[in-house]
Length: 135
Length: 281
Image 1: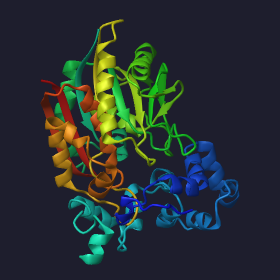
Image 2: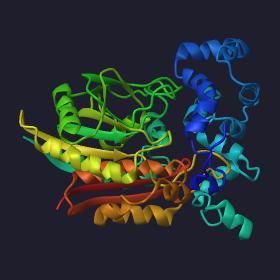
Image 3: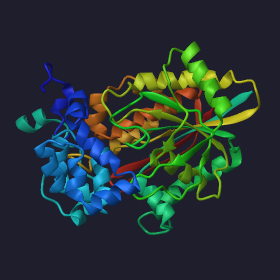
Image 4: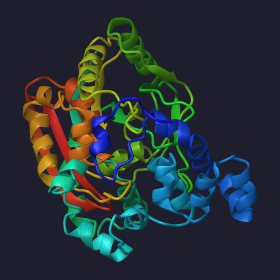
């Protein structure tokens, strides 16, 4: 699925705007993640991860991203962070673990925490892909 | 007569709820934040609203990719905390006010041309319960009734900032027209301040931009209403767009407001934390 027109938010680096195209692509992936907000489903997934996952009919790349806990790949295949985070909760991880794992430069959780303590990732140089190319 | 007694803008970071639930509010990491919130708690203890209309977003809890209402109002007797993956938060059930909620829905739909989804059965997640915990601590029962007003800010297209401000103005007219009993109403606009949970830019904080919003929320909300989604995504991060929900609260207040309290802190987990308490001037 491709959009006919360019969206101005496409120029924002490292950002996956959850628009109609991503919603359609990620529907089953997100429904799987959403299902983990029921304790019974969490138990079922814990007992038989492959079998449980199979019932949601994810695409092969989506299933692989889930199995490998590749948080960035999940976003690229239509995942929405509010949904994929439910899988992180299932794993006992925090949003800082996930933030560190997705960061452009490889970053440990400790490094990510330290970055947040010192004021977070700066917006300077992170506003626009175009700005980066020419900057 | 129902009377609007004030507005609160606050972020609703889940880890703030976890800090409260696990008794960590005095830890060095959390203490500055909870110290900064204390004056707002004192304020609400004094004004004692009968009802809090909490403008918040659901985070893949009651609603999902299968259904995303742009605006929804809870008209149930009660709203239970949702299990977001850790089990439900150990907080009181929210007691609703169906008569007042239905009055709001009728006013907004029939008189104001806002098409509101009507929700008779709903759980509420941290987007709603964390602000209650911030304002009221850990009581056995919340000291006021709660009307959930849920806004879609997680699925593009989100409503515009302008639409949120206008919803707030319409909400105020609905509040003012309620004549059945005397009620003191507070409006909470929740979520927001810069943060980006997702992608390679995760952890983005733009404190200058946040401070400008806090300032303009008081002085020039009409200017904020003109800000587009792309600017917010770019400057405040992909989830910073939640701040448009504060404009519903701001729109409900008079044009001239008096600031009771303002507080800003970085970080709360991955995000900035902002708090604003306003009354009509």
